Length: 164
Image (tube, rainbow, N blue to C red; front, side, top):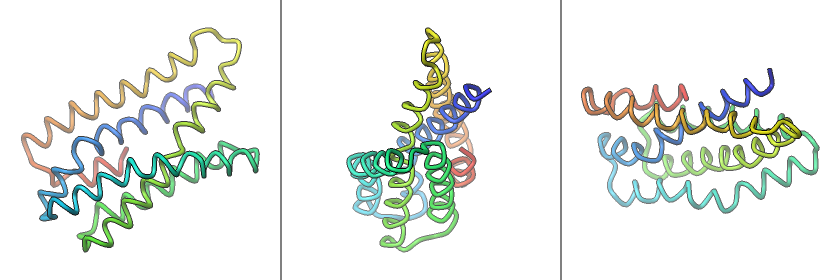
């Protein structure tokens, strides 16, 4: 059963990435943010990919409990996404929230990958099957929300992003 939860985690995480990476910029533009604010917000993901995995990895290694940190990072990411996307923000507040969102989620994949590989040890092919759900989540999110945004605009973006 733990592999089912991991598959669901990968599907949801990469569905969020599928919403976040291509659609955050157009969403922020649709609610009136300037291009420099949008560029800074999008840059937070890359910046936190440098810092976050090391910090989360250190915590997981020193406490010996990756699952707790995966859960905490996921919950914190949801909270920061809700704050960043549901309320109209000043540019500086938005940047801080997006930075905290990305810091919260930046270590989730490395920690979940190591946990999944540990759980799949000796089970040929299971890791690939579990990880496949991440790709499916990403593709589905991009296609479905792309169609929704094309037809109805970006008003529902906060709901979709937080749901993932």
